[in-house]
Image (spheres, rainbow, N blue to C red):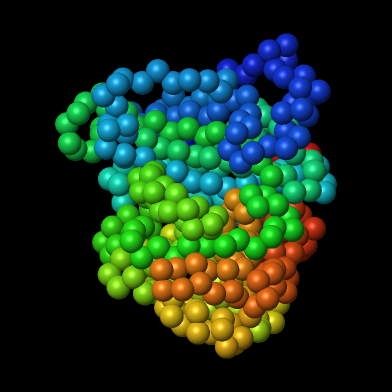
Length: 365
Ligand SMILES: *Cc1c(COP(=O)(O)O)cnc(C)c1O
C-alpha cells in the first residue's frame, strides 16, 4: 500500500461535541475512559494485503461471534502518546519504535506485520480527525491505542487468514499524576507473567488477562501494583504491572536486562540513554528480590521506580512479599526519579532540544 487512499468518514461539526461538552468530559479523565470521536481502521487479507484504510466515527464493531481473536486471543496492541507542542504542532514520542515493536508482537502471534509507514500514517490520520481533542494542558496528553486482531469467523485452531487494525485515542492524565505518591508493590511468587519461550516480549492481550488475578492479589495485600519475578525460580525481578523497573544506588542505575520474558519498553530504552547524559552510570543487570530487600535495608539502594508510556515514571516506596515487607529509601519519591522524569517530559512536550529526533510531528500547527 504505497500510496494509501484514505476513506475519511468524518463527523460533521453538528454531530461533534461542543467545546463546552468536550471540556466537561476531559476535565478529569480516568485512564482509558475518555475516547475521542473517531478511529482508524484497516483490514488485511492474504489476497489483498492491507486495504480499506478508513477514518470512521468511533463506534461498535459488527463481529462474527466465532471471531478468532475473541476465542483464541490472537490480539496485539501498542500504547503511545501525542503531545501538543509549544509551537502549536502535535508530536508523538518515538512512534517508529512503537511501530517496530508492534511488528515484532504481531510476528510472535503469527500475524501480519503492519508497515512502519502505514502505522505512522494511521496515527497522523486520527490526530487530524480528532485534532480538537489533543489536550493543551500540561499533565494531559492524547493516548493512542493501535490494536490488531484476528477476524476469521471460525473456531478452527489455527492462525486467522484475515485481520483488522484499529487506532483509538483517549484523553489521558499522567497515570499516577505528575507528583505521584510512591506506589506499594506486591511481589508475586504464586503467579508468573511470562516464561522463557513464551509471549512476555510481545504486547499481546493475553499477557494482561493473565495478570489480572495477581493484580487482585496485590490489592488484597494493600498494594497498587504487582512485581513480576522470573517464572523458573521466582527470584529474579522482571517488571512491574505494565511498566519496566529501575533501581538507583545513588547515581548508579540498574535495570533488568531484556531476558526475553520482559517487555522491551520504549521508556526504558529512552531512560537508559538520557540517564547517561544526566551523569548517571547505567547498567543492565539482574537483581533478585532478596538483594532488593537487603540493599534497601542497608540503605545502599536509594530508590526504585517503574517507567512506561502511560505513567512516565512511578516511584516504588514499599515492597510487600510472602517473605517479608520492606521500604526503599525513605519511602518517598527520590531525586533520580524526579530528574529523569523532568528530562523525559521536557523532551516529550517540546521544551528541550531533541538531538536524537525522538519527537515525530503528527500534525502541523
Ligand atoms: C507497555 C509495557 C511496558 C512499557 O513499555 P513502554 O514502551 O515504555 O510504554 C512495560 N511492561 C509491560 C508489560 C508493558 O505492557
